[in-house]
Image (cartoon, rainbow, N blue to C red; front, side, top):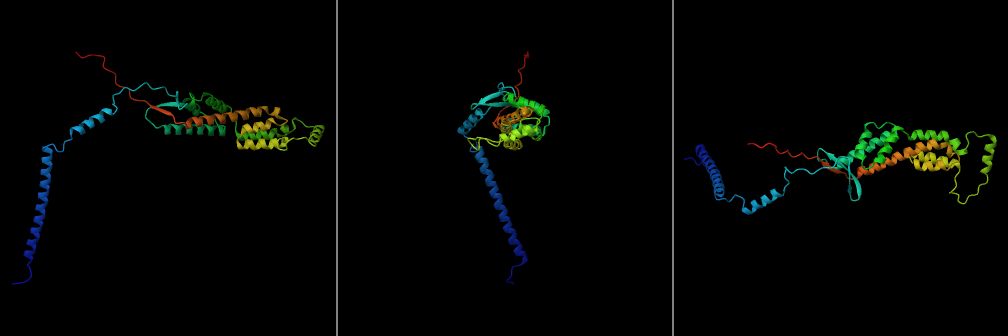
Length: 278
């Protein structure tokens, strides 16, 4: 006899092992199915009475979809939040207050850009009335009025340069004798404080610097202190209109930064049927 196993005996051994593994898997699956069936039959998997009561309490605390919405305030009105006037926006969807605040800032930025370029506001005027008209009516009116007669920094600088000789001397036409008197009057000047008194030329330089920086309020103070200030009244009016419009824009920007009150419009409950079926 041969000492080595034949191919037939090896194949028979492998088939027996596979059969054993298959039988083991079938037995495990059958045991799991039987366990689940027994647990379900005897109510082991069903929720307890305490769990059912807790679920009913949670469901009762949730808001119902059939609740009639309260009366909402009109769009554009205001309310008091922590002592400050805050605008109310009524929207078709429950958008966040941050989105409304961002839209307000974009609107003020667009209005500022139009004023800086001397361009008309166009549709922005109506948007300013809708969004800020109730909370800041005076500021909105100032911005719209300034846009109707636009004034730019470049225009103010050009006009101030043209007025410079008149502002410094205080006369429209300087003769020889007027020039001599002006020079002689500046030879001997009594001053209490070297920094408190400035020459007209110094006031002019400071005024031009303030206009270039956009600080029209300070520039108007420098022009007022010059000898020829009465001749610059029309320039002062335009500079004041420019400064007032920027102050109004700052007020609107502050209002836009305040977190607004957003009131979403809820769907109205269906009306009850008036007719009664027989």
